[in-house]
Image (cartoon, rainbow, N blue to C red):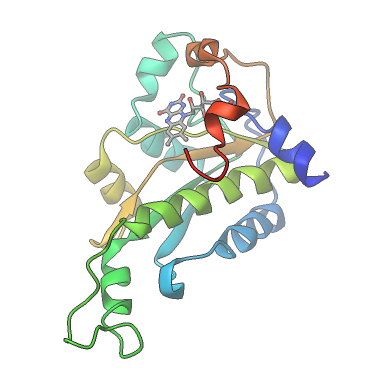
Length: 196
Ligand SMILES: Cc1cc2nc3c(=O)[nH]c(=O)nc-3n(C[C@H](O)[C@H](O)[C@H](O)COP(=O)(O)O)c2cc1C
């Protein structure tokens, strides 16, 4: 799909077929997501890809899936083809910025003006979602309510933080988010020229 069309047509989908997504397709999505940039090429981003239905249900519970189900969205986090969980390690960034080419003359790490680990993992997440759409699938995004629960389910190393769960699969008709009633900002409110 052409890039502009892909970006315009992507939306958060909240209902999927449970037919599995082929391993090669998931590997292709992961390989594209790995290409997202990172501060100092720290590469603190990782993905956990879950295909097993029972494991998907355990993951979905940490996102409060029952509440979505009660609200009429259905079990859209567990019922999908696969889940992709983007995880990030802030510690990797600190270790990277203590390496010789990054450490400051006084021997200290930079005073981070922005926590770029959150920036970078967000970029990774959107590439996962766009790559899924580009592969003819759809993707959603669910925030995680129980971070430590998800850490345990996925057996994440201590320093990794899972930022959300991206269910991927063939789309089914879904209930749209009531938030969409807010509508898009006008472009001139979003984009400012030369100065704000
Ligand atoms: C950081 C982030 C967290 C989100 N968390 C949730 C969530 O927990 N549950 C949910 O249903 N949608 C979640 N969404 C999806 C947003 O509601 C959705 O992106 C927004 O309403 C715009 O809709 P669209 O993605 O279809 O354009 C999240 C999106 C982002 C970027």
